[in-house]
Image (cartoon, rainbow, N blue to C red; front, side, top):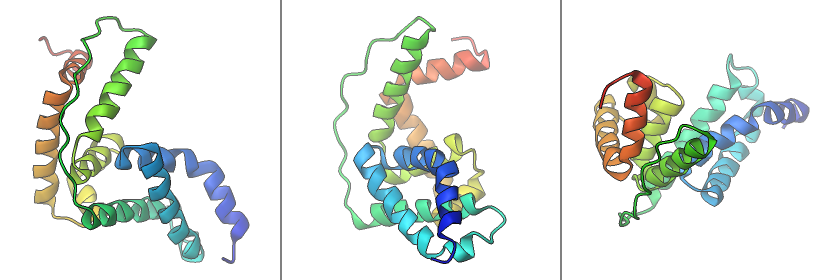
Length: 173
């Protein structure tokens, strides 16, 4: 690698966001570390080209997304039974936010890898359907159907999340 210091600086600034994206995609810390490590190895090898891009972070994220797609294509995934959903929390305090994050994390872990990737890119990374399709190398129709299936599954797995979204949008229940 020619510009090792440039790559180190990029990682110093961007690693937290890349780690978060990897965690959301992979659904667990160990899997996220493996995913991110594989993507960063590829990024390091291509750093001379990446560093000249208009948005190096977008380039590295695309590597991350493609690595994730490779993992779901290599493995056979099984559905897992749903654990008991925690009781609904009515208080809007820090504890409530923590519970909601844990419920979201648990619900995301029960989605298929493809569904989780689509949800992360569409709603956490705020990509359009076409950008999501391009990032994952799938058709826009697949993004739409996977999003629909994933959101339906999330509503069943964690109804308190749907209520929270309705509250934040001012929709009466």
